[in-house]
Every structure is written in structure tokens, then in C-alpha cells.
Length: 241
Image 1 (cartoon, rainbow, N blue to C red):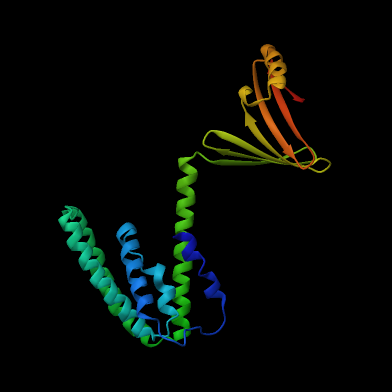
Image 2: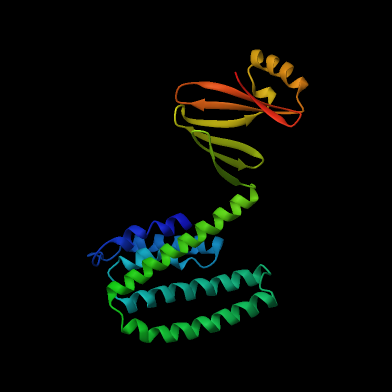
């Protein structure tokens, strides 16, 4: 939903007014109504998702507002009945809804004067801006939630003759390294079981005398190699193989 809303930035950046010359067909209206009801039943209020349709079907500012209001009143009345039958209309839900609805009614009444003074172009710009900003907010929130759930983290640090970035995702590490004389490399931390049999035997022997170790699989434009980091007495030794 966030990506769809943000995609309206293309409409926001266009110059001049854009609208359809022919009225939408009844089939298109029916499909829109079905989509509004279905998505709204899953995610709640989704009016912004369909702003683009209303803004491009050739209606005036007042007609757009009236059409959306009619659609949402009927839709939410049906949802109130359904959610009541499902036993979901608790006192807390009704009290919160009543407060929000009262504020929304006052805001809509106040906006009536503003809309009458606004040009259709400004009205469209505000509509598309609301969609783009809402999309950015949803994408930002979703990204933060996904990153937190997967314990994602990014470390960026300069190294000799280049830079290295470490990406951690769900307890797995992936590194990106760029060295001026070697080029770009992708490094992935692996276990001994991920090594080819002939290389695993050698590594198992090498790590016996180490306090700890890390094995990385390295991909570059020129070759596919492995790196072994051995820690002994507080010192780290790197071995390419």
C-alpha cells in the first residue's frame, strides 16, 4: 500500500491539469467500489488509495468530495453492522471512534470554506501530496518494523585502500567490500558444513589450535574464494584459500 501511494509522485510532478475527457463506465465504477470495500475490510480506512481515480475522472472539487463521502458513509455503515454482529464493537472502540468522528466532522465543516476558495489544480496537488506523504510514512514504518523484527543492522567503516559495509539480517551476516586495487567483493559468513569437502578437511585442521574462528565465502567479478579468520591469544590472522 505504501509503495502504491508513493507511486503517485509521478502525478504530483506533472505540470498543468490532467483529467479524463470521457466519464468512467459503470463496470469501472463497480470494480472500484468492489476494490474499495474489499481492501477497506482488510485494512480499515483506505480512501487515499483511490484518490487517484477520483482526481482523474473529470469531476469538480465538490463532486469528488461528495462522491467519496457517499461511498464511505454507506461502506462504513455496513462495516458497523458486520463488526457488531462479529462482537467486535467494544465500549473502547466506540468511544475512540466517537471522538475521532466528532473531530472529523468539525474538520470537514471547516474545510468547506477552504475548498470553495481553492483552484482545481491546487486541489489535485493537495490530493496527490497526501497520497505521496502517506506512502512515505507507511514505507518508513514498515521498514522500521521489518528491520526490528529481523534484527537488521548496517556497519560502514573505512579499511586499507577501500571501504567495507557489514549487513546483519536475522542473525546472518553479509559483507560488501570495495578495495581500489581488488574491486568489489561480497562476503558471506558460512559454517564448516557449507564448505566443499576438500576445503573443509583443511579448515577443520587449521581451527583446532585457534581460540575462535570465522569462515567467509567471497564473491568478486573475477573469482570465488574463501577467507578464514583465526583468533589466537588476542590476535587475528586472515588466511585466503
